[in-house]
Length: 133
Image 1: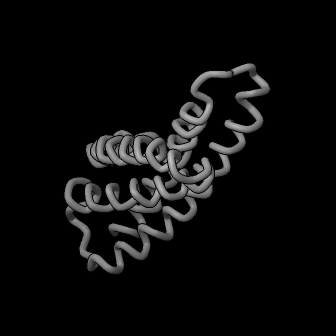
Image 2: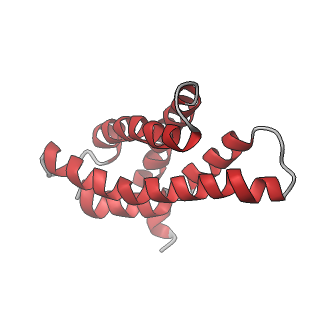
Image 3: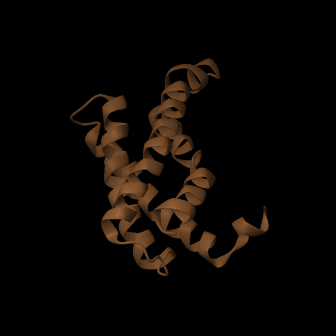
């Protein structure tokens, strides 16, 4: 199992996913200027997802034989699960766990960063088996 995650493909997935996560994270800060935190998380996830799809298709899963619309369909399905994980973890951390622990600075940023990291492995498997098979 561990060997599957130590491949060149997984490393590229981490790099491109990291860049998409940075886009997600930065756009959430921008969106938060106009909408509430929970809505900003979802909007940012969509922004990051478009970035992630493009980068994954170009650099990670280049051998995929699926047509773009089919890949995009499965990509969205996998990411619906991932955004739910990110959203739930981010809100739980921001509104309950971090305040309980006494964290007072950068609470939304810390919560969102951790929330983004949670679905890394499930997303990789979903994209490899469904989105870009």
